[in-house]
Length: 167
Image 1 (cartoon, rainbow, N blue to C red):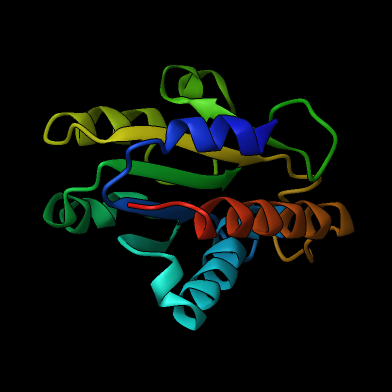
Image 2 (tube, rainbow, N blue to C red):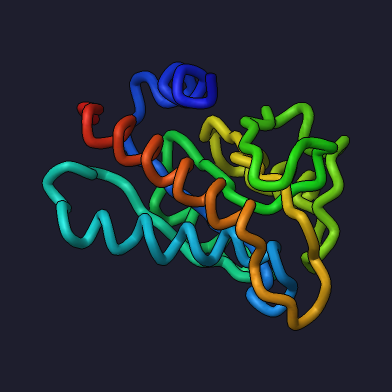
């Protein structure tokens, strides 16, 4: 289901930014940075298959990347983050822009809903969040096996979706 929703979301894309968020020192909150690393490596290996795409590891300060977003003028922004959604750990869900404020995304300096309002003040980009359900966000914990499985599942879907798309 995530694959179909994401395909629909990116129809007619021109320039996509993946802004991956998370704290690598807080257990499963490392989801965003891990996905940024894995997907970034995939894009570097096959740049001809991923035209007009950028992947950014924004860590815990996605607001520091608003200047880059402004300069790239993306048609689509896809946030990737660990989100408390009441699902099984490692589960994936697309969270639409108008739903983001209702989910717990609390390990970052600025609420994501505020950042989206700011982005919308200068950008017409379509915005969505790929949420991955964490098991634990405790400091200094390793990522859970469930999260590892969720990340692998997401990587398979991203590769399948974006290798088949034309800009």
